[in-house]
Length: 120
Image (cartoon, rainbow, N blue to C red; front, side, top):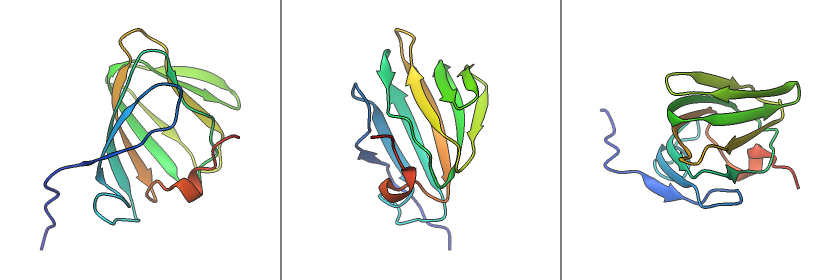
């Protein structure tokens, strides 16, 4: 039988400003370890620590610009575009534009604090 997810759970975000993360599917909201799906809304000027996660992260930008730094440089991901951050590769996300950004992130396997490996 399909499982209805009646609402997301708001989870705490890392970074220099308050970012909203609503997890629909994942370890917190549905007890799912295979994947996580979250709706992200970050303010302008938000930046999180770099990370070298043990999961692939697929991100689709809905509004604004998501700036993605990686070991080979950086890129801006715009509305209607997506980016894949591969497990084991260092990345750092930020939203430099004044209006911030809104995006959907899918992690395989699901995001966890034990496997994100954030920079100190």
